[in-house]
Amino acid sequence: MQVSVETKEGLEREMTVQFPTSDINGEVNTRLQSLTKTAKINGFRPGKIPMTVIKKRYSGAVEAEVLNEKLQQSYFEAVNQEKLKPAGQPTINMVENDDKDNISYKALFEVYPEITPTSLQGQNFEKAIVAIGDSDIDSTIENIRKQNQTFTDVERGAQKEDQVVVDFVGTIDGEEFKGNEGKQVPVTLGQGQMIEGFEDGVIGAKAGDSLTLDLKFPEEYHYKDVAGKDVQFAITVSAVKEATLPELNDEFYVKFGISEGGNDAFREEVKKNMQIELDKAVAAKLKNQVMDAILDINEIIVPKALVDEEAKNMAEQMQSQYQMQTQGDAQLQTSLFEEQATKRVSLGMLLAELVKVNDITAPKEAVMAKIVEMAATYENPQEVMDYYQSHKEKLAEIESFVLEEKIIDWACEQAAVTDKDFTFTEFMNPKTEEEV
Figure 1 (tube, rainbow, N blue to C red):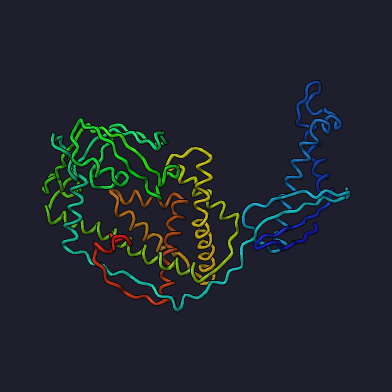
Figure 2 (cartoon, rainbow, N blue to C red; figure 1 turned 45 degrees about the vertical axis):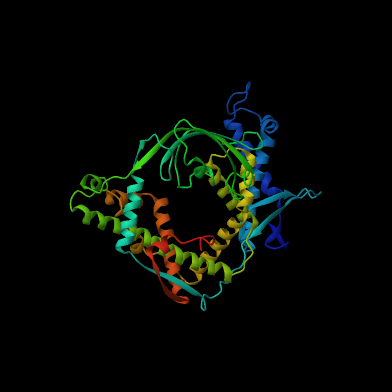
């Protein structure tokens, strides 16, 4: 087998492979000979079919099958011989020539880039230090009460925090659009369920009232066909309901697994869950800083094939989430995710190289400790632990998570880490630029 490689633009390589036609002929003859014993053709007894008949009937299919197998085999042998690391699937084109003794083809593909990670020394990360106070627990309990509130019909006009039940029909320039209509939709006023102006426009309306609102879809609305456009909503209010918060009593506490200990036990349980969420958020913020730094200080070229595949996967996830079924939506979403897909692929390659170069591992005991930690939040921890340990793909997810934590630990050892104090509210609910 003869192999030559030409470097094209960027990471693209064109590999020319040539091998003897006899490599194909021998295998084709062997398979055709085997078919004389197993093939079934009307007019011939099994095992008595002449080779001439077998060749006439099957030679084309067998030759194509053997050639395809040989192309795949020779491709992998060639890239190993040339010590190449292909990224994505190759495009293979046969080379037409008058040489009947040899078969030639060209394989066009991208390779993984050579990566030498830049040191994190000199980088600065900020670690949040957050204490949970009594007022934070009070606010969380109030939110829990709101999540469990009940609504009662009232005859007055709708007020903020009431729930209204509405039918609506939206039109743009008098024309209907996808998702323009809703029937008996419950809307809690002040929660921002609907586009800006919708909920404020319903305040004051009573059951049975009809009204028309002239509004505008946000520029960044998830459904691009209507983003930024003026819209008119014809609304009918069928009910106005006043919210009633549940009392903090033993009956309420039991719903959250607190059968004894009353208010003190409930507050302690709330604080414990708040701490779990806080720890996750603190770790996530530090992780984001580390990952952003790794991307910022390492400029690499990424294989387009891998970016395209990642963008496609992200588009499919978006389609599934929003139940988008048309090809047009899929193509739109793929292009929207190209930048994010590039970052994911870049980061994945950089992390893989950092793990290899710095011998970062996910010890079995750390993986087991993580499973125990996760299982503790469930009603039957042992059942959860058994599930993860008996499913390889789920265990691999935990191993990957632990490995990521080890990378963060390693990064913080290389860089400077500064503690910064936050209140629980400002850390968990940071203000946007518009609110500052």
